Image (cartoon, rainbow, N blue to C red; front, side, top):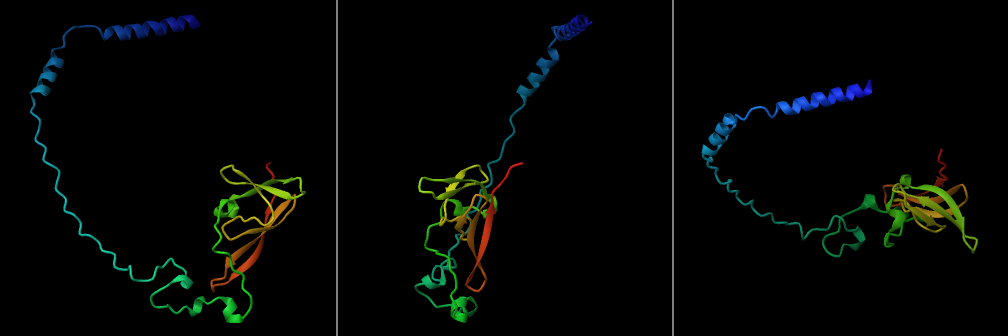
Length: 189
């Protein structure tokens, strides 16, 4: 049955291909090609000439850089910033501030919700390290005192079940509020 079906299909395909070879009359094709060659190419206009836009002159060079911190502005008038005074000056209480001069690298450039703790290691000096994996699959080894997360998070303790870090969040008045954030061990199901 199967062999018969294959031979039947082969016969139909062969017959179809052979019908394309019947007849040598190609006069209609030659006529069409002759008409196409006899046509003249239409004239194409040049692309339009565009006028140059007038130059823009930046005139705010003498004003204060909006991205520079207020304490580093060297020249120009000072802007009153009563609402931006830190809480330390307003209430005479110590106010935690992040170290803005420290260069942020590695895990500090990634949001904390994209990081997962996947394990721990102990070295020869009995220091416990946490293994943290990023969303792209890179594994980092961190210890107490290291930084991670976008909110100036500093690791304060590592256990086999979690990493605790202190993060600093702005209160909108120039001061920062400390918050302890746990990063629990990620268990895949």
